[in-house]
Length: 233
Image 1 (cartoon, helix red, strand yellow):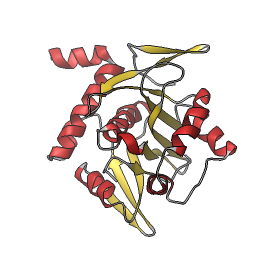
Image 2 (cartoon, rainbow, N blue to C red):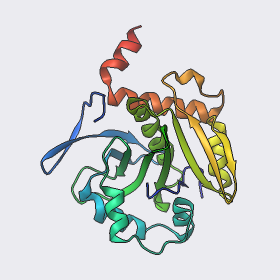
Image 3 (cartoon, helix red, strand yellow):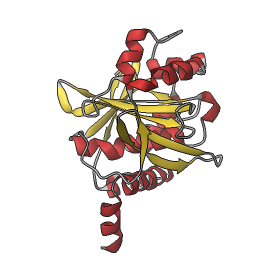
């Protein structure tokens, strides 16, 4: 497993300007476009109910280890109820972005990043990352987390909480290098990653520098007007 493989346990009205959209029946979705480490293009957009078959097919392409690291349990398939839950998101308390190979209706799903606001602590959201085995190691997990990190403050989320399997050492190490604090050590490891608009508060490390750059790129696509103001300042 690469560090950006899987984290999470959760079968868990934005306020930014979007320059690009992809057409879906009856709606226009915000989209982001990036290039992965192997040179392939990837499109990121919010998950919608029409993605349920894509998620089901993506799950079938996950190795047993990847499934375990994602759900912290052994799952052989996603039930209809789970697919409903994973694709019926409100974009406020349950946020999910998917990575696609292109913007066609038949585009292959490559990964998902999501977070769920905790009812008992509304400023905290538990996040999870899923990346297909075939594209791990190309920076997609980092990109998905950068999207969640950029969106979180617009929804008054100040902490992204990651639940990591005890033997997922690469994921745990990566979160530590991003400045996440280990807040619980039991059958799983629980990390809290503070979210701030000031990216200078991220640690001074190569991992954090790479992540900082990704968040800046995501912000620039989400709100090009803000990015230009910051560039001119």
